[in-house]
Image (cartoon, rainbow, N blue to C red; front, side, top):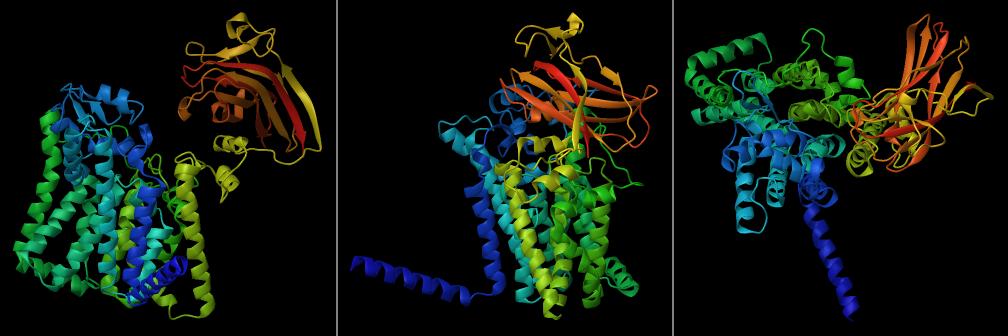
Length: 621
């Protein structure tokens, strides 16, 4: 009887739940689903506050945004940062102190990143600090309560951002179109990663600021007031203080609903007539922006400090193709569903020229600036991460396309639906591989490697070598002949050792011995054949830093001039205390060559490496 009663109770609860959902607006239901996905991903799937070292919430760039808070309120040492060596030792948020640089004239440290994100983190920092002081956790700014508080705060901003975006979209589109657009942005784009997992990056909070800016702009022109103008200026100023290039956010309130030259003239006339609004917004924007030069002046003596040093913009040659399509980190490559947002712009123009011009001008200028940055792949990024904050604006174009598709033939709807569902699965797969799966190597991806791992969850170890070398002979060769062998028994004693040697004598690399001689032999072949160069490698300790991994290199020369070279990083697949035979494939170059050389380089690593039994095979297709 109890079992029957329990089953009946569950059915009643399910009926109530489905009744509740059936009476709910589609866009509200979509909002709840988006919230559940973000919260579930951030708290159940990958809670960063519980991760160590460089996977923690406060790590890498985030530790730079955050640095203002502990330096000012806990250690009261913003100029010399004497506390940070201990933080590096205890928490390892980055390999070294990358968050600031020594200003030559003043001798003080100047923080690399602007202070805007620290403003948004501050309430949660103080909450974490309060908990740390009341518990047994260290109140050092980096222990568990701080990590948890910042993570919760960033999830709050994410939920707020999606809520604000719904408020914007529902002003111009039907409830169903708003629902589909919300689901697409959260489920099918890299916003999911930067809202739920890497939410402490600036892109999450800027997404929310842009969504709020759009909503306040709409309300301002419906009923202008000084209070709304102050809020508009504050949002634009805060966005700029977070990332200086976000100064273009001011274009949104300035150009909103100006669909013609006449409308633009009316806007100018409106501000001439109502200068108090312009002055109020300008004052608040300037007040926020002024925080950074005031800090620079206090820290260094200079009003303006370019804290990114050798990193800058190529304004005349933006990296447009790479920014869109490169396998390294291309925006469309890793968030293909946003093609629909761009494709929706012509439909937005037909729907409303007033809505189109402000949206389009901001979007295309934002893309241009984003891809003009010389570090266009934005370091360890899942796609072009700096595009995420523009999604509230681009979502208007996406909604316009969905609105158009709602009135078209069924097969077109089916194609779009299939594409969006694929993009959703692809986005979930990418998000998983960026964290738990481990196949996504942010900032290192190549065409060959991406195709080899695409939608897979497990691949052979050797697949990782495609990150360095696109040449890989995967077929069974018709013939294979050895054209060179060296066991290094006759090599100069300066380059070999018998200690822990693979056999007899082995080449060795260590901190003081960074390179080996080039082992060369005459060879020429005009066919499109391949070489497979292999050697035995023995490690004691594994080098984890990609850029310091020992390299296995083959070079092709013609009359002493190098015409081609291939390389791999052996520690991608060589583990600690392991002996392993590793192969490097190279397709013979198109241009003439007369000599092949093989060499090894330790790339400034201090990890010792032994090498033996070098063999070169000619593989025939």
